[in-house]
Picture 1 (tube, one colour):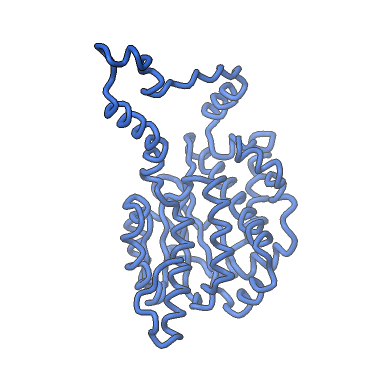
Picture 2: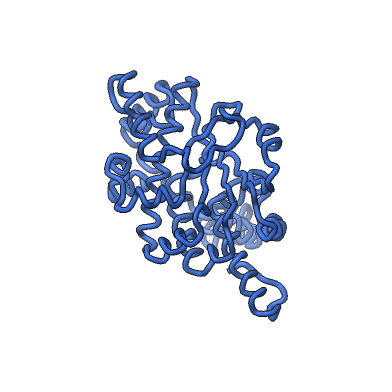
Length: 323
């Protein structure tokens, strides 16, 4: 419900047809698009944030965090529609994609404090409204600094999150093929060969309308028809009355004058059960989704910024720690 309210408040459903101001420039500076599929039919999304280093840095300097996040949300919406097309093509739900980030041209200047704050702001929005949509992340043509930073960061992440990320050098084709990533031309296309997110998504939606007679809804964007119908029925069903709160062990205990008698729970047992009840909500969060890959990217950027400060400062800080 919170995600749907956010979509309505921010006008997210209209971003493909009415993209943010400066979208053409943003797509030229940070070209991206769907370049293939893996063996399970998931879209393979290529991003090149380092196409023109000086132009990208100048654009980011002229942009506010809110503008940057909205541009990235527009890209996320395009990906969502490609997931919907993959679901309809395979006849089953496909809600995750494979990301390939070409790190060629990325330098330490991309990781200054302001840019790191931008990516952290987007990571918060992404994890709250597009959760668990990344299957794998490949960083190709990664410079040595990024490889070294990943070696430091990896032990800090949940193993399930860390297993999703592969940092590769210039010889990446074999690794992608081994993971089932199929590229139509056998290699990643050049930046000028990418059509652009908005244009390619509009073409995709036009084809979907011609085939189905209507534009896919939000639910149908990532679900096959049977699952979409089930979700609509679930949302239309009357809500059940919330269950009464379960009394704590101390509340269930008999009055003081009776507690001395037989059957009264010991104070130590009451304290133990109360402590478990307080810890239960937190324990639910400690699992495979301990950290999203978007958050991991923000940590990586922060760590890169710290290491760059150490290098420029002549090694005055001996062990950089993420902010």
